[in-house]
Image (cartoon, rainbow, N blue to C red; front, side, top):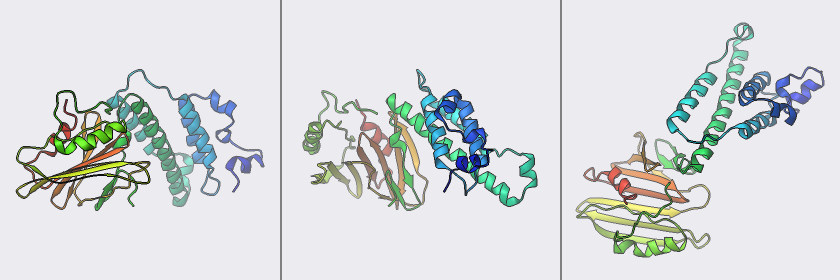
Length: 297
């Protein structure tokens, strides 16, 4: 398929917005680049759409985006909301009020395509900046449906959290040593009194040498389960869940996802190529306090 620029160059009427030469893109400011990309999307149709044009604009925007001296999550989010609101309102033009409903729908589709493209740019650009300042925003990317939750496909704090003077329970000493050999921070929840260890397992995946660990505590009929696993690439863990909402709990600059699973309460989070989860079947245990205890100094 020919690009729209090629198609219109043949007739000598290619609009400036389809000119993605380095000289032109370098001469435009970020706002001018965004406006030109919008014009390009409005000009192209489903038949003449060229991803290379949009990619060139996004790359040019990425090169011109500046990193602030101080990152403000609130300011960044407010700025994003303004951009999204502006992109979500379709501009009314004489053409759009006189053409058929089919053309109006196509215009709307392309404007939403632009919004999606800019959303990706601003989201991941902001993530790169925040990650550079120590905020684990990549751990916030998760997916869920009414039946499952995962950090991968549906089918931070780097400091040690076991400071000197804090005794490590016997059930964690082996896995702590294994993590330290790999240079991985060790963290564990402080389990309430009365719970006893009933099962634990440490394992190493032969092909990858990745380490995993799970432990379960019981007190009468109540249980607490703590698990973590090292992984490469996207997580392949899928958690069963019910149709209740997922709560995002931010603590220690980390995003922890809390959701229900047929009466159980589960929290899962991800950082430093490690995925953690805590679950319990009793409301007498404050899951958020267990999460907090993993970062206890």
